[in-house]
Image (cartoon, rainbow, N blue to C red; front, top):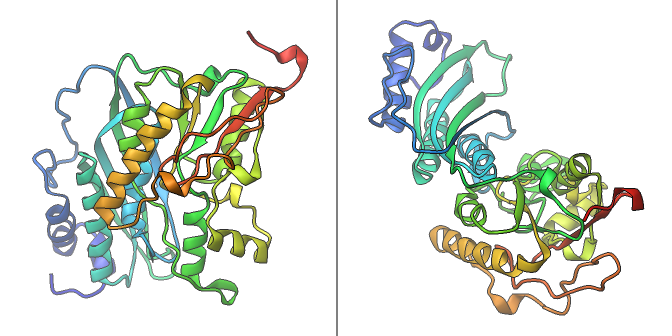
Length: 351
């Protein structure tokens, strides 16, 4: 394409729109199941199991931030929603709402990032739609993704399965994404190079879903870890005690939160898992998580903390009267958060 910016003509159904679809979307997302000339996609026969569907919309400013852009964010968001539900994501649809005037090179980077993220997870984009909004009526580009996946028949997850004394584990430092995006905006005179945690959590969820005693998994996006705790309470009538010193928060995130009065436990994470696990087997889940994180770090060239980064005497959980116990090595990024669930009142106790 010779166009350098998106124009209204790219959304009117004519030659410009077809060139946009073929040369930007079709080229980056090409796979045997994508037919850009068809009005509907025919999905191949699904593997055995329960078919799950998840849909989400994505807006972010700036469109590109340290650690990703809106394209990779959209891919990982829906992949992770299916992953923490116990499913293997297989197929996506993609809707793009593009503002008139968007640079074509930026659009290409966004779609390329989405393509890389879906391909890495074994997901095929099989359907989509594109709309162009008049200048000033959009935020550059908005994305909406719908994912279809299959959960094995022997996988059963849900917050209603949480029991008194269970432990919650968070798979890495919280608040990285929320603060990374804020710093990228250079608001309040602040700037920094903190990386978003946006990434696929499939390596961890595929291991965790088959482990005995895993009650549920969630990705703590909007509302962060604290909102997941509220959801547990609503689903199980149990209280959740969060032990602040045991929840990993990076120093840059903590510093920004202290300056601006933010609570890091409510900040969005885009590459973390909160998992509920029976007390007896926390160590094994943490071991799976650590190995998954090491593979991620080898792939991205980042440093993966080892066993020596965790002070086993420091990371203890308040178990509601039974005394603290040592945490499991490190869960993905060097620190395990053990959060004890306990009854709301004596009348709520369960055997």
